[in-house]
Length: 312
Image: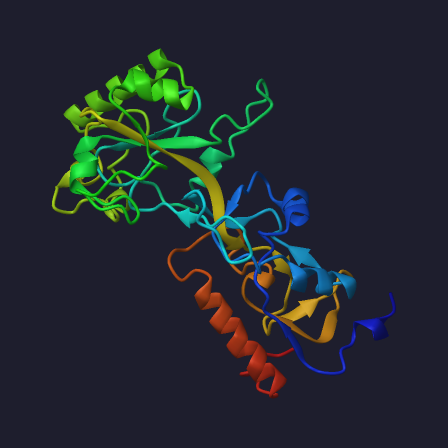
């Protein structure tokens, strides 16, 4: 490709979001499954594909802003795609735990949502698959009487997408989980609650674990509570993402860098269409908005000839 083909006649800025709704790109680049995007379906990587056509260099393409999600059946976008929502509060509140399809806990349920993807993406070479996908959040009537679950308030009718059972054995049967395994998991978990010490995953030890918990309680009990009162409930949990954070590599002004390392004159990018400025690390709430605003500001001023003393 000649250098001339890399020059744009006007200043163009690609800010089209990530590629989480593009199945081919997801399968080609991401480190593990992304089964349920928690973003609008328009994030299909169209800007990334345009940039590739002019030789853009790509970075951070294996990563995303991951999150455990739930998908309420028949809750769809206008285009017909299934809506999915991050599950933040419910898994942190007392009287809940998460189990995989073997009926075993596999993580600290109250941990930060982006980092939890590592647990969901655990690959078992013997099974040759992902044993923690899908998983289930299990809660009891203590939870149901005290706390909302998404928009389902205490004292209201149970929706049909709750899996409900009058015993743990019946719940295991409905979830097609081994009954002995699930009973052992709950017995162990409830003992940890009683002693205030989750020996398996340390749930409640970190200050972060209490952030979405019940702050009317103290210490580990902001997030730890026994799962013991029938009827019992379960909701399917999958791994999704707020967006991908891989894309075009840029310089400090947001100008896109070509595969040969040169600047593609006239082409800028910001937001989830660019290779994330923090790599695969999610710094916290606003971790996408801050860099998008910053690089948008830098790109706009560079177009206007303001470089703020930075030497090119």
